[in-house]
Image 1 (cartoon, rainbow, N blue to C red):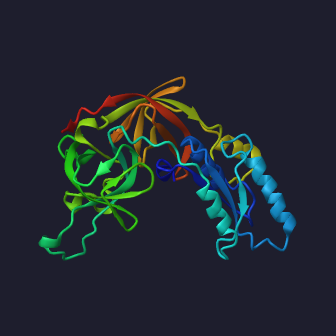
Image 2: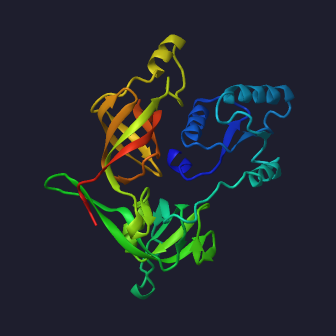
Image 3: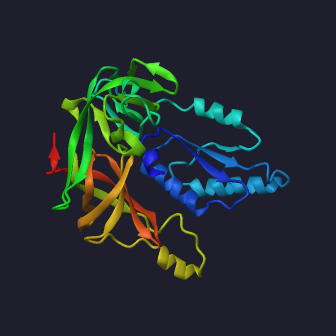
Length: 332
């Protein structure tokens, strides 16, 4: 959820009309939207066909939704009753989506593409003569990529020493052989939308989303590979996405978010990747985190913090990178 939100300009918040609002997961989804600074939101009141015989139920839930989003980034967002099953009001949703303003794009800076998928397009038993290179899918954050560009992929190949246990990474050098948007071949690609990038690399490297979270760009203008960061953080007052089944007072104590602790392991979302992070130190609203593997990120980038609760990772807060520490085990 958080990985997908990292590359989006807007969001559709889905609410089931036949259930109370807000449900625990709806709270978590809205929190993710706020963390990623998405201010263009459309709220969809789905399954309206189930409660259409009781107009008061629909109106009451709409008021519940308004109360839920009051004071949040979604306050004032349009609430559209729909039935996805019967395609009711879908044309209205499309109309609202087409009215979302396109953000200002940066076409001048050196290009950076964040990878959210990577795969091998070759069929089993493909002949060597027709073998295609690996493919990475993602969105361009800034700049312009062109067919024929020589590019780097960072952090690149990540390995772990069997002798020492040290994690090392090596930058991948490649060249763009094709660019695709849906089924349209492109000669160049700009920020906005999802792009498929054909690369001159061994397809083994891109199989099964192995490159998710990595960055593609020109070799001379890539972000640093990091092993540690200093971040300013904000914790939620209580857990989201957790159903309350016991007494209210007991549930409130259990769902209260406890402070961060030194040596604690958290799940950190950076860009489109999720990885483990160890708390090195905590000072007031600043935390130093050591990543379990190298990652590419920039100062000012948002991160999300999740803690393991009852065998599931639950969102407990977010932060903003204030300082970066380059990885010592990085090879160009």
